[in-house]
Image (cartoon, rainbow, N blue to C red; front, side, top):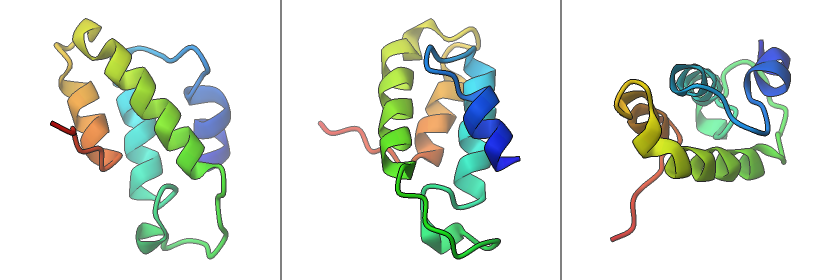
Length: 86
């Protein structure tokens, strides 16, 4: 599932709002972005922080264009532990 999510679901040009949310949600829940949630392996994922930042940038640039009014994008940002700086 991890390989499919990283290589098929997450594409360089992004995806529709719901697709982006489900990919981010899966990766966050399995601990891809943080070791404290990584229950299934002790493997490190050095590229995870780069992918996380790329996802945040993509979502932020498309947040107002979401087909679901941005709700899935908002939830994806929460799953990525993104905090808006004021």
